[in-house]
Image (cartoon, rainbow, N blue to C red; front, side, top):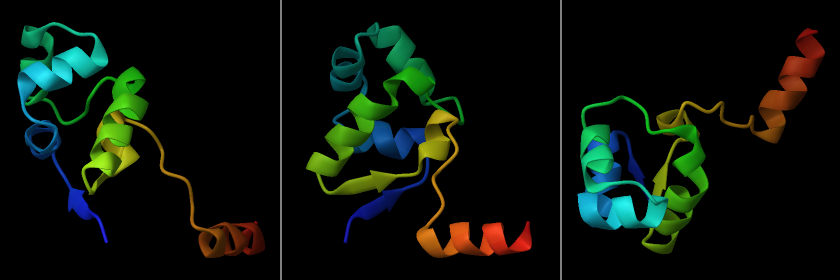
Length: 83
């Protein structure tokens, strides 16, 4: 089971800090450092960062990148029945 990270700072720490995150996302050190102050990351950094997290045994919700998570199959069925 993967460790669930809940904040931008937790994600940054799990990925090795500001410099490695800046490098993996193609951003400046200052831009990456600023993300620690925000509730979400830029959405276009989601795949690179989530892939790196998975490789290290971590998980983070797509909501940290201001994205809507997919529903589990049972939730989709309930939603369809309610329509």
